[in-house]
Each structure stands twice: as C-alpha cells, then as structure tokens.
Image (cartoon, rainbow, N blue to C red; front, side, top):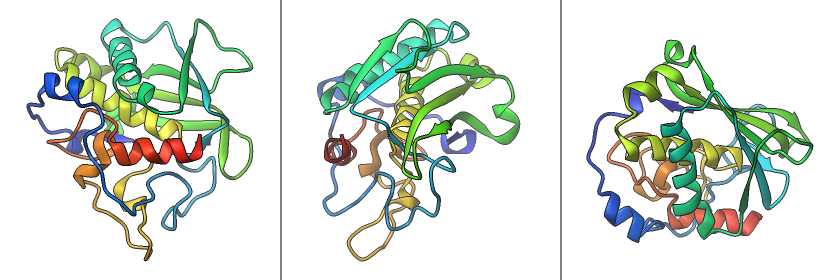
Length: 207
C-alpha cells in the first residue's frame, strides 16, 4: 500500500530514470515474500504470483494517465526482469492481477492498495486486484513520475515485493521503509521511480 503521507512532493529526473531503470542495489537483503520478517501468510499481505507469466488486465475504469503509468512501470522496470508481464483485454482464467479504481482509499490515507482474492496456498496468489484512489490519482495526474512510482510499487506487491520493514538480512534484521535500495518499494520521497536492481534480482530468483 502507498499512503498519502509517504508521497510528499519531490522532483525526480525522468531522463536519468529512463536511462538507468535499475540503479539501486544492496547485497544481502531479502525483499520478496516470504522473508524472516513477514508475519503473514497469503492472502493477508503481498504474495508471490502464481508463475513467471504475470497476466494483467487494466479495467475500463482506469483513466489514461494511470494506464500510462502502469505501462511505464512495466516497460522501464519489470521488462528488465525474468517476469513476463502480459496484458489482456479482459479477465480470464489466466489473469493474475486486475488494475482498477476506487473512491474510498483516501479516507484511510492510501493512494493505492493490493489485495489477493484467490490464494493458491499460503505463499502464492492466483488472482489479485490493485486499486488506485480516484481522487489522489486525479489530483496528481500531471506528475508522471509519482504515478509511475505508485504503479511500480503496487505491481511489486502483486509479485511479492515487500516494504523495507518486512525485508530481512542474513541476521534477521530489517531495513528502513525509506532505504534507497528499495527503489519504488520505498515509502517516501525522494524515491526511485524504477524497481531497483536488488528487487529485480529477487524477482529473478523467484521467477
């Protein structure tokens, strides 16, 4: 989940991010579910996706500026990993995640939210939804970097990436939620709009 308090205004260089989409790294960190510090079972938090083919649907309720952010997160971050994000025009038995809009997230201080509705087991999810808050997205529709960061963050949760506090190192310690190596999974600004090479490596390990 991305909260409004964690997304203060900041200027991020789009050109740098496009040329270097995976620039953060931190050795020895586990940032994908399950870690030593994830205290939940699927579907009670971010879960691993069902396979390396990640089929997604952008619902008709999603406005163009959010759809562009989802596409940019895919092209400039996830396409650099072993995960294959495959767009679909409608929900099918293959669909892993549906992106849609919501009118009530702002009331709980959230910009977006991931929910798994069909867990395969205690680790993997077969079908999930990502909700973007209509009001927050509309208010920031001209800030392409921020919207892309939110899309990258929620897509990350749909494949099991976690916040810093839920990551772990070899001794069981956790990172700060604002550790720069978290890339778009970082909570707060300034933050990378891209995935970050540590998270990319974690995705490649699992998928």
